[in-house]
Structure formats: C-alpha cells, structure tokens
Amino acid sequence: MRQVVAGLLGLVLAARPPAVPLPTPKGPAYTTAEDVVAAAVTPREGAGVIYVARVKVLHDLGCVYDIQLDGQNVAALRRGEQVTLYADPGRRLVGVSIRDAKGCEPALAHVPVEVVAHATTQILVSATNSYDLKIEATTR
Image (tube, rainbow, N blue to C red):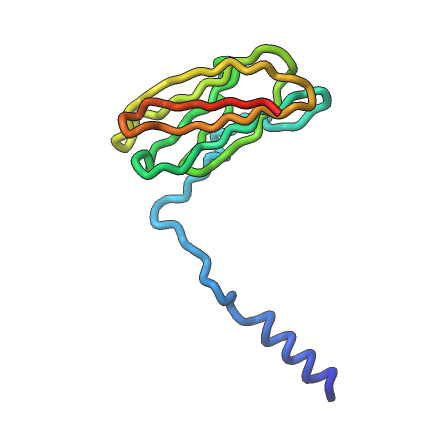
C-alpha cells in the first residue's frame, strides 16, 4: 500500500507545473549566440583565455556591444552578458563597439592584450552616460 501511495505522489509531483513561473520574452527571441564565431570560443591546447564581460548599466539597456578579436567580429553582448574567447599566445587587439541602433550612440574602443598560454585575461566593458566606452583589462 505504501508503494502505491508513494508512486501516486511521485506522479502528482512530476505532473504539476513549476512553483515559479518561467519568464516569457516580451518581444522576438534574440540570442547573441547567433553572433558568436565558433572558432573563437572553442577551447584548444596552448591557448590563452580572454574573458569579456559587459557591466550592467541602465542607460544603455537596449544596446548591443560587438566584440572583435584582431579586427574580426567574434561575439555580441547585451547588458550583463559575457563571452569566453580562446586565442593563441601573443599580442592581440580586443575591440568593442556599440551598434548604432535603438537610440544607442555608436562608439569604438580597443585594448591591446598580451595573451599567455593557460592564463586568463579579464576584460570588463561599460559605457558612460555619454556612451564613451570604458574598458578595463587584467591578466591573472
């Protein structure tokens, strides 16, 4: 009898909806994964890591930041998103640009990075109220 009750209880719990409703998008689905270059985000032996994170600020809420590595677009970030890039050791140039869309002022900034095998360089990107880009890079 206990096994039957336990089995029925398990079925009831499995069939009920989650306690917290899942958010539904208010507009068309958008994912920056469409803008990611697979070769840049694929780990490989001897590569260094470049972790790029976009800081959450309210004034550029709808803006998209394009991330370049050595002049090639490799990713796009929305507010609060991040991407991990893998690059061969040596001097690299990481660029960040704000797309000219949805009232966002276009901007472009670059930071040189010395990529070291098996080391991580963290880059934090944000924009001021006047859409001037601020980039901070540290290597660990």
